[in-house]
Image (cartoon, rainbow, N blue to C red):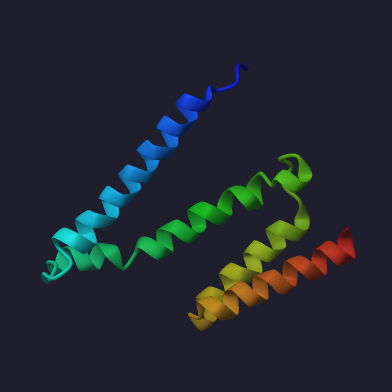
Length: 110
């Protein structure tokens, strides 16, 4: 693999920064003072529900800590997090329960 040149790296960093700013500006600067249609608001409610599992699933199924092999502590913690979230409808409780379960099972199972 060839290393990226400093110039190319800065072009990528600046391009990503401009793109990120532009995406935020569209929602905040251009339409921030207007009422959004109901169908847009309905879809935006599910953004967090879609993003959190997308961030967590690879860490459970292919964890870097185990060289990509799924292990019992992470799988059990994911199940506990999901169960508590479904049962109590509380994000904080589910995250704390999942974190405590992961810590406990990593300690017990190694």
